[in-house]
Length: 91
Image (cartoon, rainbow, N blue to C red; front, side, top):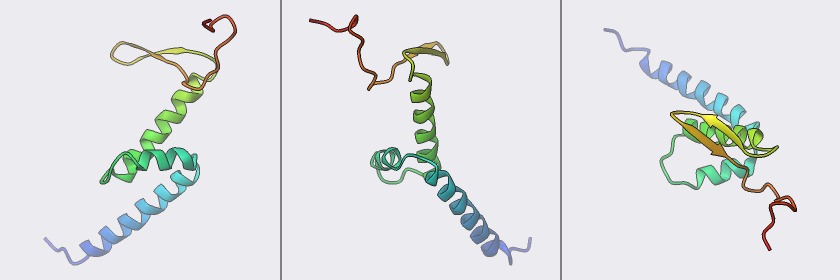
């Protein structure tokens, strides 16, 4: 098997992968990306991007109030910054 071009193929893949992730991160909230990167060293950039994208989508779903989604069972998703209504406030 000829591996003469392997280094060039790997280099091209890394450049393409890096440019796509740069575009993905550019479209995301910088504060959320920063928070995701502070979770620990060694987390692959693709995992960070997926984490931020999922978090953003869950916030969108819960923006108008609690929402139940089905995974392996029902999960209640509530936006943590959603203000309480006067009816929900406790004395």
